[in-house]
Image 1 (tube, rainbow, N blue to C red):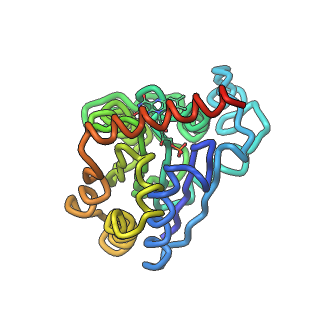
Image 2: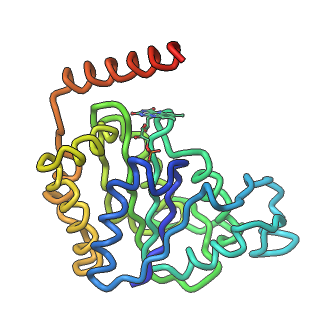
Length: 241
Ligand SMILES: Cc1cc2nc3c(=O)[nH]c(=O)nc-3n(C[C@H](O)[C@H](O)[C@H](O)COP(=O)(O)O)c2cc1C
C-alpha cells in the first residue's frame, strides 16, 4: 500500500496535528505501508487560476508550474491519501484547500452520472483509492469537526475516492503538556498507531479505536479555565518585557 500524506499545519512536525498524525503513520509503516509525507509549508502550491486550460487548451496539464507537478502524479499513484490539518475557522487550513483545488486537471470536463449525481470522469485508471482525514482543533467539543468532515466526505465523492475515516483530536493543544507529564494520554497515541495498522491490514479503522483517539482528555470547564489562565500569563509576560 502506498500512502501519500499532506500535513497542512504551519507548525509541521512540532504542531498538535503531528501529535496524532505521526503515530498513525508509524502504525501504517509497521503494517508494511510505503508512506510519503509532505508539509504544505515547504511546498510551493499556488491557488487555482480557474482558467480551465487543464480541461480545454492543454488537457490534463495545469497552466502553472509549481510543486503540484511533482505532487499530483503521486496522489494519483497512491492507494491512500491522508489529509492532515488543524481546524482553521471551521474548515481545513487554506494551503490544503489550494492543493485540493489544484487536482482538477486529473478529471475531464465532461459530466457523467455516478450514483445518481453529476460528476466528472477521471483521466487515469479507475482503481479504488481511499482518503483519511487527520485533524485537531483548539475548542473542546467534537462538533467543531462537523463542517470539515462533511467537506472531506464531499471531496471524496467528487473525486471518486472512498472516505476511510477520520482521526479527530478535539482540545488538541492539551495533548503535548499531558504527554510531558506522562501516563495520561499514551492510550490516545497508541490508538492513533493502531488505527494506522488497521487501515493497512484490514482496509478500515475500528470505531472503538477512532473514539479512543478522540476521547475526552479533561472536563470542558477545566480546559476552558486552564486555556484562559495560559493566555493571560502569556499576555502578561509579553507586556512585562
Ligand atoms: C487561524 C486559526 C483559526 C482557528 N480556528 C479554529 C476553529 O475554528 N475551531 C477550533 O476549534 N480551533 C481553531 N483554531 C485552533 C487550532 O485548530 C489549534 O490551535 C490546533 O491545535 C493547531 O494545530 P497545529 O499545532 O497542528 O497547527 C484555529 C487556529 C488558527 C491559527
